[in-house]
Length: 143
Image (cartoon, rainbow, N blue to C red; front, side, top):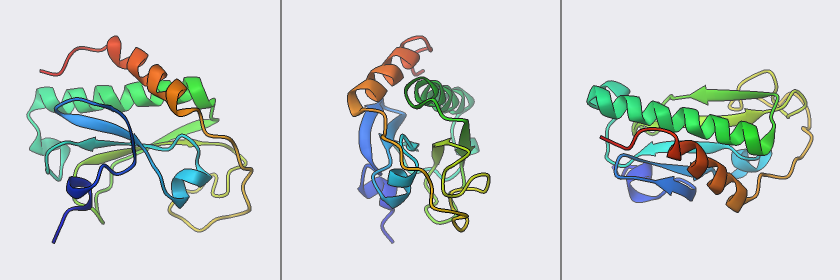
């Protein structure tokens, strides 16, 4: 069975290195949660502990940098971080901006909608990409 995240980027590419990539989710969920990003491992591994410790730390640095960039560009009420991999067993993290008036709040985005959410404009691709680059320039280089 073909792995979706090995075969496809998983969204609009914002940043990448040899270890992982950051993409903005380009599907219905991403439209409802503007700025929703995924950090995807470049090679097919299922769990964080499949990575050597230095690489696992670097993935988390990228997750945290993505969170900071989204807080700066989208100004959400909350950020959700999730690494599930039950449907696609390829290591990836979800970084999801949330607002108190979004369609699912306070439930996870994968739950049933509670209301029609307020639609917001997504942070511009260029501004999010630059914010992410700024955040990642302050972290260590990939080992």
